[in-house]
Amino acid sequence: MNNNETAPHLIDAATNHDSLHNISSTTSAWDEVAAIISGLIGGGRYGLKIRIPHAFVMTFLFGNKLPFRRKLQVIAKLAAEHSINLASFACLYKFLLASLKVLSRLIPQNDGSGDGGGASKHSGILRLIKSVVSMVINGPFSSSFKRTINPSVSTPAGLPQHPYHAFLAGAVGGYIVWGRYSSVNYQLILYLASRILVGCIKLAREKGIRPFSWKKLKFANSYPYGAAVIWGTVMMLFEEYPEVLHPSLRRSMDEIYRFASFGYSS
Image (cartoon, rainbow, N blue to C red; front, side, top):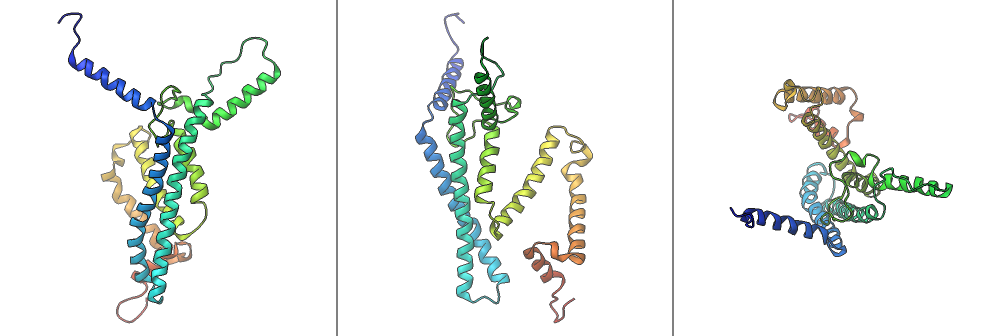
């Protein structure tokens, strides 16, 4: 091949790389606004889709004493709360991600470099304030993440520019939206807690952290023991300390283990 000639696949690769760079570099404020609106609509729609069937079944299954009109009101209330909360959280989360992107460009990561000689006491205080603000915006362990913040390249709209941003935005949104206790909010917190626990165990296994990385603790091997511990624990609590269980779980277990089908209660 002539030195002046370039392989077509190399040209295509370079063109694709430049295109991706241009796309990520030209993310505008309108793109972020669109992502926020998309989160608002998606959260509200999914909340209705997931809560209406669940509320319908649970209300008609356990709300036998409620009149029909009241049952419909309960279903509508639960569905509206779930939908509004999911929409509010998604909207707030996307808004905070966009705000953190802007702040991370205005306040770059602290690299520990100081000004030249002759720095005054005031400049030292300003550097300290800047370091604290940078730690809050970019995270205390920003240098340990694989993805570093490059002010010249913008992350696609609606996505965190830094892993810490996802945690911070989620924590703030969780406190504001889900921090108020209700049956719907509490159910979602319990749901997420169990999923997070399983996810952290999987992550520990992928990272090679013992004992989770041991071959004997693979899912297929450990699942039966996990099921035995969980069911043994919940049955012991139900028999000895039923008041500590969630009311919905306790009602379900009462239906199975206390109210028999042949006219007597155990």
